[in-house]
Amino acid sequence: MLDPQTPERPYHHRSGGGYRNPPGSPQNRARLRDFLKFLLWDMRRAKLPPLPEGLTAAAPPDLAALAENELAWLGHACFAMRLGGKLVLTDPYLAKVAGPFGLGPRRFLPAAVEAQDLPQLDLIVISHNHYDHIDTAALKAYRWRGETPVICPLGVGALLRRLGFAEIYELDWWESRAFGDLAVTALPAVHFSGRGPFDRNRTLWASMALTSPARKVWFGGDSGYGACFREIGERAGPFDLALIGIGAYEPRVIMEPSHATPEEAITIARDIGARAAVGMHWGSIMLTPENPFEAPDRFRNAARDQQYGEANAWIMQVGEVRGF
Image 1 (tube, rainbow, N blue to C red):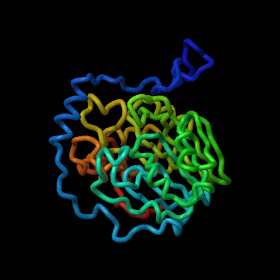
Image 2: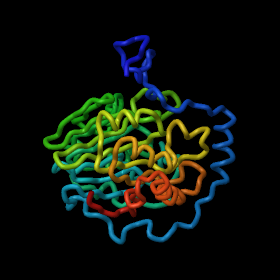
Image 3: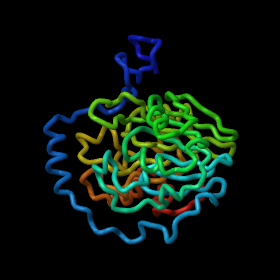
Image 4: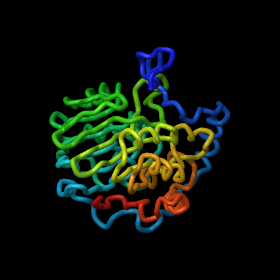
């Protein structure tokens, strides 16, 4: 959608530089007191419950051996999949801490694969520049930075170049890039960007469609719920599989414009026409004060209540490999 006041510029491009969410997105309602309560009270009081049994697979996945149309969850928003003959990794966060200089939320469940053990990938797909989606330590440890192309939203390439990646493709929403039989399209999302106090929304955020001759996968990155998903369904859907964030959603006054609830995640899956949906962005790190293990039950219950089908709402173990 174009900005009605400046038709030559897309709506999500701000006139002074930077980006904003698409029309029909929830508005920021939080005030300073809400953020102070969140940081100084809610997060300080939040306690990690005992880890449920069965969070992790019995053995780490062999990513190089993934078959076509197989998916491995490494934890949080990081997946490896083989699609169109290409081995793809999404949003590499594999470190213990999500933040600069060792500061920030700490992971309570290790990633399924250490960064130095990653095989050579055919493509890395990045949704935005937050620390729990771009892990600079992991990317520095990756041994094929000069050979592996990276797809990312506008403005994120500068960080990746500093990390030593040579082949970087920055996409605006609705732009695509083909890699043999695999096409990647950047699509809208409801979120924000920034890695410090002075760069908020200076780079773009996105969801991503990955399309092969046989399958279509939607990777949601981080997103709240908004009207853009019906447009994605109409213009880019349907999808065989959607990878959708279901965690880090409280308090709603702060998180509504950036993280969907498990119930909203099912609505997103229905809006975009996804036949099945994997719940991600939960169970590895406490970014917000809700119980980090309640999201899967809410996700499956919402699938039943919204007539999506409980069997179509997948909850994977960290390290699990599943065909789609």
